[in-house]
Image (cartoon, rainbow, N blue to C red):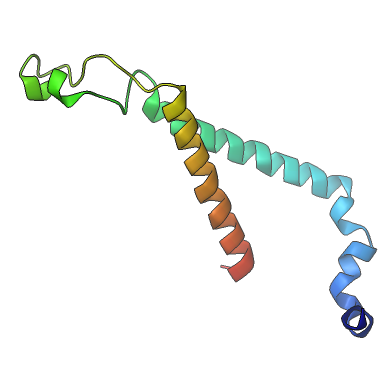
Length: 103
């Protein structure tokens, strides 16, 4: 309590209700939608059409076909979900470190 009494300027933005204005909320929601779309499509595009998951011994290494690198198995929902989850963790870590350090 003493710190707040000695330094009221630290909490000036919350006293003026700047963090709950319509402009601030719309900006925040817009950034969330943009980041969500970027994370989704950066993970979806490489994994579509059976990309990313291949059995080497059924494809190129077995000598069956030089044009078929795998046996046709593709990534499932677990693989896609894991890549999305990891991307969210990396993105949030970057955003927090950027906010904390200020670079």
